[in-house]
Length: 138
Image (spheres, rainbow, N blue to C red):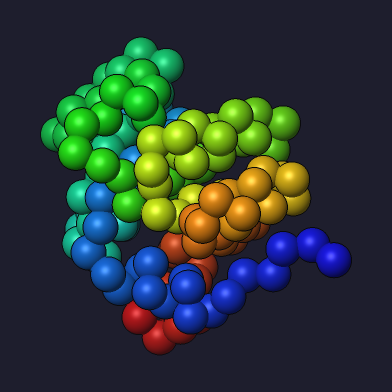
């Protein structure tokens, strides 16, 4: 049986102030990560740390090229990369000491989810905070 999201984990992640590293976040307005991360920053009160190939800053927040470069720890790694590329990102999240990984809507990797759970991380897969928050009445 595949991963099943736990509504209590989702609610905790969306209501507890935290540092969210957003992998795949750039200033490209055609990418959904830009709007979702803005929502997490403005509506959910999360600290957003952009992670992208160029290490560019987004939303006035310092950007990084990889999770290992982020100082001060990461609570949640929000993955806006396709399913074929998310496994290594999840492995980097584990190595970086993240507490949770959130694989966005359409991003599915059962093996990576199992590795994260085995390492003690909370896992949310194949959904979006902008879907889950209203569904939970947040």
